[in-house]
Image (tube, rainbow, N blue to C red; front, side, top):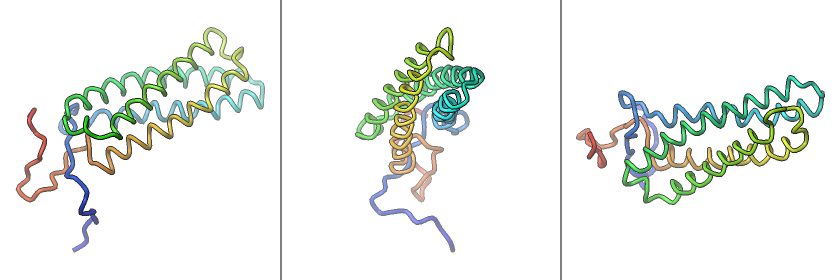
Length: 171
């Protein structure tokens, strides 16, 4: 029988508390700010290369939607973090939290730089989008460590044979 290899040191998974029918909402919501804030750098580079204001407008909307979606995903993540006791004990949870707050601050700076005339931001926009792309990588890596490495805030796979989970107090 084929089965997924699991290291012996791996802790059992901990189900997300902010979920619809056990489907965790934070991992679903983070894809939108990740996509928008990652595409911000190529849009800024395209504007600087071509000089076409279309790309500055694209960057403005990517930045704005990335910030809005990031605030929603952040609220869902904070709720999960404070509702799952074991999550607060992981250094990677706090590191992910700090990196995500820094990412949202960079996105807010980007919105401020680009408003009201996205094309006027010019090279300053690129100066903002480079560290933003870097922080997307850092926050995403740390979030992935929580989900895939520690099994925190996931779908709720029950790793025990009796079907119970070690952290199900709120059900």
